[in-house]
Amino acid sequence: MKSDIHPKWFETCVVSCACGNTFTVGSTKDKIALEICGKCHPFFTGEMRFVDTMGRVERFQSKQNAAKNNVYVSKKKKQQLKKQKDDLTPKSLKEMLMGAK
Image (cartoon, rainbow, N blue to C red; front, side, top):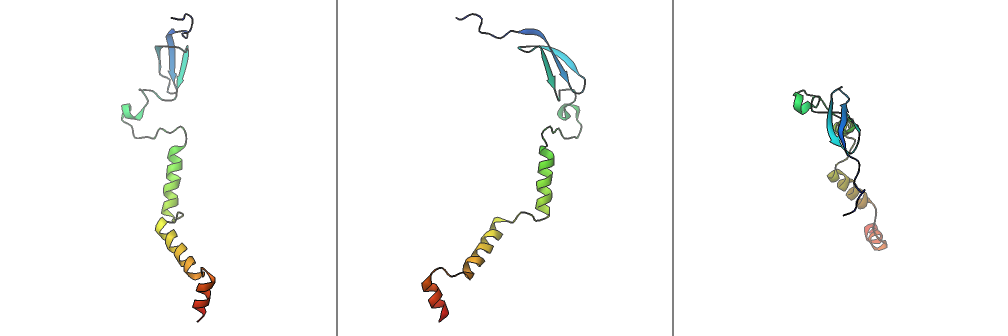
């Protein structure tokens, strides 16, 4: 077995949360900073609030608002528009000559 390949172990790693809660654990890092912990997480506190650090909730809500405003065209509607466009344009010279009669 090789010696000196394992990382240094800190018995008293201080973990601090954004809410102010701190506790100690064993880790390979001496300090750990958290955004949310068991004392402030909505699941454990029973509060109704969103935990969003990357803007996912706002992005989802903007998609929902766009759908309400009919910004997106459904797949069926796109197919109908394409079919109407294709019906108006002749496909070949033969179709053009037969349509002229």
